[in-house]
Image (cartoon, rainbow, N blue to C red):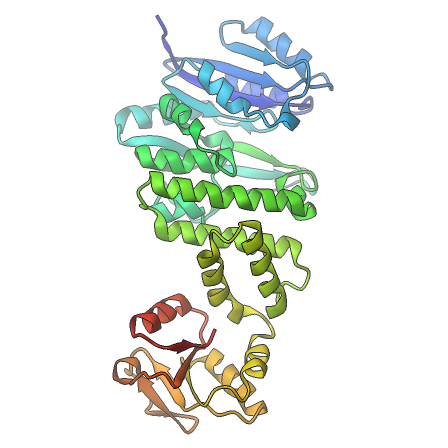
Amino acid sequence: MNDIKVSICCLTYNHINYIEDALKGFLMQKTNFKYEVLIHDDASTDGTTQVLLEYQKKYPDIIKLSLEKENQYGKGKNYTQSLLLEAKGKYSAFCEGDDFWIYDRKLQEQYDLMEQHKEISMCYHNALIYSQMDDKIRLNVVNHPSGYICDEDIICATKGWYPTASLFGYTAFLIEQIRFTAPTSDEGYRNFMACKGKVYFFNRVWSIYRDFTGTGWNTRYYNNKELAETHFRKTILYFQEFNKYSKKRFDKYIEKRLFQGIYKYRDAHYKNKDSVDELRACIEDLKDLMEHVVDDVLDTYYSLYVIQCKDYYEVVVKEQAGKIDELYIYGTGIEAVKALIELDKHNMRPKGFIISDRRNQPEKLLGFPVYEIDEFLFDERKWIWPCLVNGREEVIKLLHEKKCSHILI
């Protein structure tokens, strides 16, 4: 009879300086149930394997090893999935060999939560990030109270990514997730498990994540454009598949998540990150990379973020000089003033300003009339220039709803 309730899944490779911390964190757990420790070692060459064998000899009923003779990482195999398929526990917990747990009732508290709240499919807790380079620590997830994780934070992790070493969920669901090829396994598990139930977060620091600055994923992403392209493509294709599976439950947040991916790619591989030309080049490159299957997403990103380029107003006015007769600026804030100043340099004058709501707004601004959008008459001669950063997406959508013929992006 299987009486194991929790399976701990651990991947390790050349972690000789850290693996004992991980093992001690596993073995110190105080629980009223049995658990197992499944460890996959990817042919370590630094003595990690010998340490694992010594601990297995001491704890043969708990520690189970899978030892590679040749390194498999470069072959693209996912051994987290292999460990899950071997797991006997109703629940599984993850921790890689260079991270470690610091609370001896971590498993018990996560187990109790899920046993008492059947609607929860997975839970996380907070962690400290320890930087090996400068010997400093910082909090992993900030400003996130204990409780259910909302849909936006499931997809976009706006308060910080949820630590791998804190993940605890139903083994059967985690195995089912295998059929999705997510850009990272963490993201794939979180998104999929949110479709199976609620996801919970303990705002308690129960583990330590070691940050090896200079050797981690982000460093390789920023230094290797081919790697970044592959990751971006996988991200797009994954979310297209996941959006269908989730019946578009997370649709509006998926767009935001894709925007995060575009921004990161642009930040990593375009030197003049703040210019209109570089943003245009980035968008066109990504369209080609994706064979034009997500042009709408890329065009939307451009329309929303091009205004943040340092030379935006200069470029737009130079390109449009002499081409537009009736131009109206949407907005009356600082961005609208920037537009007005640039237009004046080229002896161009708008016909007026447009606002969403006239409350507390003057009828004229700097000598130009101010129109409320509901009283504005659109026709094919009029161009509307949305000059605002916050709320730009909503304004562009509103202009489309109003059948505006010409929107100056």
